[in-house]
Structures are given as structure tokens and as C-alpha cells.
Image 1 (cartoon, rainbow, N blue to C red):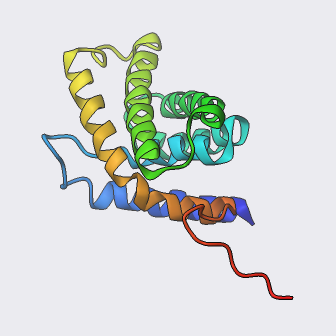
Image 2: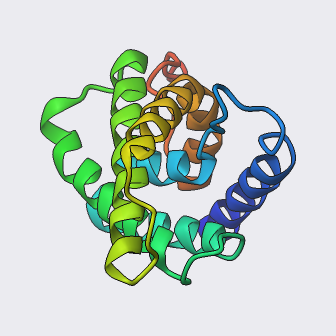
Length: 170
């Protein structure tokens, strides 16, 4: 059941990315919604499961990108694994910490994607413009992170820590 929910989150995310954020940009840069999903998957699901979900998100994004299949998947999975590995000791699920983590994770995924592209022969992906794009995409994703938390928690079956627990009736 969770795979179907996660797939539906992927589907809605890619549709929003390819429709809304084709035209809506800040300084010429659109948010990387599937990178956002990947980073949050690492945060919410842990290193192994999060990396698997992030790999799937990357493959969904790779279908529309003009680079070799699997490039975004590898970058997203790596970042999700790192985020999932460091999350337990450093972050306590506050919205500000999650936004910062998503911003850094998105920037890392964007730079990692370009570096992997250079390794496999996609010349011209690494330049000074990359830092600007990674920074803006990271900030945009950090701002969008609270909106993506609820659908991902639903898909992963994790309740929100911001809600009061339901009263126990005797």
C-alpha cells in the first residue's frame, strides 16, 4: 500500500514540476520538487528506505531530463542516504531545521547531479552558474518543504509530530 501512496506522490510532484514550474521561476531557476521529495524521504524514512525512495524519485525525473537515465537517481539516492544517516542525532523535526536541511540537501543533489554528469561525459554541466542555480533551488525547496511534509508523511505512514496525540479513552 505504501508503494502506491509513494507513487501517487511522485506522480503529483512531477505533474506540478512540469506544469506549474515550467513558467514560475525565481531568477530563472525553478524549484527541484523531486529533489525535495528525495531529501525529505531520507529525513523521514531513514538512510536505506529513504535512498530507495529517492532513487525512484530520481528515475521519475530522469525520464524528462536530457541526460543519461539514472543520473538524477544516483544523485538523489546518495543525498537521501547521507541525510537519513545524519538526521537521527542532529535534527529534532522542527520546521526551520527541516527547511535548512532541505535547502542544503537540494543544493548537494543539484551539484552532485552536475558532477556525475561530467563523469559520464555530459560536458558543460559544472561552471560558476551551477553554484547560483544550486543555491536558489535549495532556498526555494527549503521554503516549499513544509508543504511537502504532509503528503510524504501520509505516503510513508508517519504521523505528524506537530499534532497533539488523540486522547486515550478508557
